[in-house]
Each structure stands twice: as C-alpha cells, then as structure tokens.
Length: 595
Ligand SMILES: Nc1ncnc2c1ncn2[C@@H]1O[C@H](COP(=O)(O)OP(=O)(O)O)[C@@H](O)[C@H]1O
Ligand SMILES: O=C(CO)[C@@H](O)[C@H](O)COP(=O)(O)O
Image (cartoon, rainbow, N blue to C red):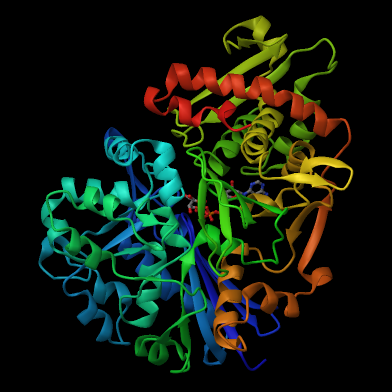
C-alpha cells in the first residue's frame, strides 16, 4: 500500500504506535510498556509518586526513550516508514511539559546518531543543559492541587461558573491548577520555562523538531480555555500568572490551533535520517487521548464510548453544550460546533485488578493476572447481589484504592446493603455481614455494577429514548485494555443498556492510537479543508470488518432494576462524600446532583 499513516497513543503505562493504510486498515502496531521496558526509572504503573503531597508524575526522559524504542520496534516488525505520509498522536490529557530556553535550538539540531533522550534530557545535577526546565510531567492521577483548585473555583464566583466558562470546574489534574502550583512551588524553574506544552503538543513538537501549538480539543483539559469565545480565559490566566507577568504566561502557552486536521509542517530530519521517514511526511495536530478515542469510529450523537484503561472514561460526541461541575465538556477534536462529553474516574483498571487478585489468591492454582475467576464470579452473582429482588437488600459499593475524582473523595472501600430507602454499612469483620456480602467474591460483580451505575447516573440527561425503549445510548463501544473482557462488556450492557448492543473495535487493540492515525490520514488526504472528519471516515468505514458486537445492551427488566438502584447509589455517594470528601466539593460531586 502506497500511502500509510502513523498514529500514537502516549498513555499512562504505555506508548503504542500503529500504522494504517489509506483504506484505514491496520498494517502494523508496536508498543513500549513503561514498567517492563524502563524499570530503571523506578516507576510503578508508569508513574512516580510522592504520597505525602498527593503528587503523581512521570519522567519526561522516559517518554523520549519510549519514542525511539517504539519506532525501532515498528521497524523490526517490518514497517516501511518511508511510506508514512502523515503522523498524528494522542497524549494522556492534562499533563504539562516545561521546556527550557534551549529547547527550540536543541530540537532543531538533533543528531540522528544519538537518541532523543541523550540530546534533550538535562544532565544530572544540571551539569548539562537540556530541553526541559523541569524533568517531570504532572500526571492526571495527581491530587496535589486542592488549594489551587479552590482558587480556580472561586475565581469566577463558583465551580458552576468555571464549568460554564471552561467546560469543567476545577480538577486536581487540570493543567491550570497544575501550572499555578508549579509556579508557586518551583518559582525559579517557572522563570526558566520558555514554553509549556500539553503532553500531546510536546509529543507533536518532538516529531516536528519545533514547539507546536496546543490542540483545540485537548486544551479543554486545562481550566484555562474560554470555550465560548475560543481564546485563553483572561481571568484564569491572571490567576495562574499571579504576581508574574500574565503576557509572559500567555507566551509560554502559545497559540491554540483550531483546525484538528492542520499540518504543522514536515517531520524533523532526525526521524528521516534515523528511521527512514520521507522528508515530506506531515505532522498533523496531536490531541488528547480521550478526544482521539472518539475519532476511532463514526460516533453518532446517541452512541457512547466506555474506555477501560488505567482510568475509566465515558465519552459522547454531542452538539449540546450543557456544562456541569460534575463532568467535562471539551471541543470536539475535529469538527467545529460539536463537543465531547466526558466523565473520568481515577479508579478504573487498577481497582478491578485488586478484586481480581483477591479472588485469585483464594485459589492457589489460579494463573497470576488471569481474569477467569473474576469473570465467572461476576457473571454468576445475581443482579445487585439479590437472589430475591423482593426481599434481599441491594449490594452497593464504592471501590477507590486511589483518591477519586467522581465523586471527589479520599481513597477507600465502602460497602452498603440498601433496603427500604436505608443504607446499612457492611463491616468486613462481622460474620453476619460477611454472609450478606462475601468478600471478595461478591465484590467482582459489585465493582462492575458500581462503575457502570456511576456512568449511568451522570449521563442520564444526555441520552434519549431509542424507538420504544427508555432513554439510553444507541450503541456502547468498549475500548481500552479492559475491552478485551467479555464479562465486563456483559455488565456494561446490563447496567447502561444500548438499544443496538455493546460493541468493540475489531481492528487493532487501541482505539486511541487508531483515532490518531485516522486523523493523520484525514489531515493529509482530505479533499479540501472543508471536508469533515466524519464524512472522510464514513467514506472509508467498513462496518462489518471494523466493529464487532460483543453482546446485547438493553435487557428488559434488568435495565429497569439498575435504573431503580440509582436512588440508593446516589444516596450512598452522598453519604460517603459527606463523611470522607472535601466538604467544599461534596455538593458539586455528589451523585444525586445530576438527574
Ligand atoms: N482481559 C482483561 N480484563 C480486564 N481488564 C484488562 C484485561 N486486559 C487488560 N486489562 C486492563 O487494562 C488496563 C490497561 O489498559 P490500557 O488501555 O492499555 O491502559 P492505559 O491506556 O491507561 O495505559 C490494565 O490496567 C488492565 O487492568
Ligand atoms: O485524566 C484523564 C482524562 O481526563 C485520563 O483519561 C487520562 O487522559 C489518562 O488516560 P489512560 O492512561 O487511562 O488512557
């Protein structure tokens, strides 16, 4: 195939690269697993932590090494990179990279005989100047910015007003509060910072050999973008700049590019000489991992994507802008006038793994990391743990091994029995309670129900009736690592519905990288700047080859039982937040708010 397109996904634990042809079919894919390939950085699940301050961050040098390694792996697999006409990528959202004054000079003069890390990373103890004023990028799991979030939420009068203006109320991980904290904690490094990139624009800059603008979809994850007027929000910039010069901050952030298919120009000569890319290969705007995921398929307005990565995210594309402090709206990464609706939970894959491991530990013969027992336990447990729905209480739990965002609450596990509008806490050390809620067996179904009930609670005012069926998504698309698990998909369908069913992509394992590769293809091949991404995709989309139905969604009776369970679920969240959350955030995050 002559023309090929390369898409990347730089996520929490991995860097994935995939090559597609102009027919959008997968040609090659390769990945770098940060823990397995780069244990020398002392990372765990892709990140470093400083629990005393709630900090979670990743070494930028690790990502540089990962870029060289993933390209090497693609070549080892036989990818002919000389066929690549366009490159785009997705970066995990909200992370920031702080470039030094030397960055542009170093980027433009890269020597193909050396690695990226050798040339861009600063030497230890500062004996060699590098391209970064700070060696780490704050990670989306960071929870160190409560003080800054309070100031962001107060700046326009209330969290709701901030959400109206920027698409989201203040969140720990959002780049605005993160940059404010960085400036206050490391004033010298802030002063020495020439430019600030998001992970996506950092990544584009490496490939372009020049610092590239931030993308209009990804910028919605900063709390700094005035989404209604399409410009940096001057009050939020002022707050972030504090006693430093606000125009200097604006210059550090640079411009935001409005066209998701825009080409920043040709690929850096480093990649041409070292990996054999054609000098004409175009670098198309890189975006965030979630915006990129919605580009992996022709998503209609009533479809939903459930992304089961390290985080759980729930995504919809919509023309309605209905901001709320409990969730996020961002610009659609490709189509003007559309928005991406998003819910994001910190406790996704890792929380499920904890239950999986606890169940496996009861069975010495269970293969480590196998999901078989977790799955069979979850699917053989009755709906809401009720053998008899008339007489038994509902089992409702929250499983947050890390502090959670939705709702904003400290780390912990809470289990309740709900009957007659009353929540009774389950005491794991009490024998009677253990009979009503066997731990960890009953947790397998309860954690999945809990995660999907939370999504249903918060998205219910965005979905519409489907024919004669009650309001629900038309299709649920499962993506991310957890999409490989059919028991999880089964539970997603039971709780969330889906009039046409639950689907997964059948081309390649990674929707996010695929979305990036499609965007690269669109950017290079579109007939004119007016050709919409959706039209481009529809023309090449092969429904029967590209997606696969995993199971039914809506099941009459079951869907309604989960609908009725939302009352107890919202009540449980309210109570847990009241007893364990940040009081200022309790109201805005309690589940009952969204009805
Ligand atoms: N068969 C499976 N069943 C359930 N979860 C799985 C399965 N395979 C992988 N996962 C989960 O997928 C997660 C990684 O997903 P991925 O989308 O690759 O992560 P990220 O993009 O956050 O780096 C892991 O945390 C793991 O729990
Ligand atoms: O914080 C968010 C979205 O707001 C996360 O979705 C990150 O974007 C990381 O995603 P994964 O590594 O789990 O794919």
